[in-house]
Length: 229
Image (cartoon, rainbow, N blue to C red; front, side):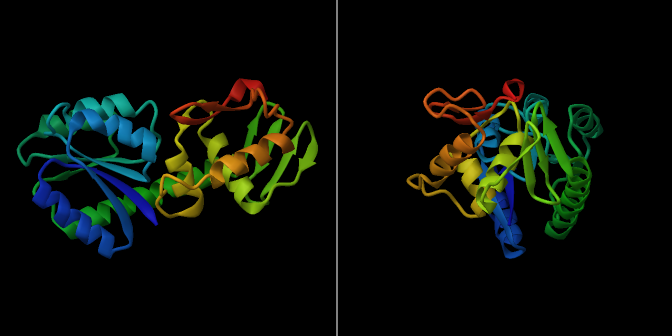
């Protein structure tokens, strides 16, 4: 189930959009305060971000420019009908598409699906194999080699390592990793991710007492260090 972060301060509109997308098998998180959006993107790493331009605290254009260097997924801007400059700036700041408000739900859904198809198609081409230093992940065959030696991981351990490797150099929250691996909301108590990280470290010869390859960033999450391999 794809996760949508909807940055929209009109509560009625946001709820209508959420209900429609949920009925079409999306998970939707609403954020109405501009200042909170970058943090929410970092925590959730949603499949797509929908940004209203006029948000309290920080406008959508500023947010788009701020998150684009850290977020590789599609960004869809919601713009005013007569604001061509907003559309131009949004695309220049890294947005992938825009929808004119008021957004007709079916049009918005079609744009979202088109962006996700394009994104996942490009991601699949780019991610058939990931090589970082001495570590190699063959995504299609689901095989891992470290210094030329085969490493056996469980299915969930492979998915977790792949998610970390795809986001090398970024801190990924436990909530994001849990959602990505298990495709369900994190309850705040489950420590499955921590256990699997511990297993992965042992199998990849990363010192569990002082890990250098997959670091714990206290209070934030886990960091796959690309230069450590």
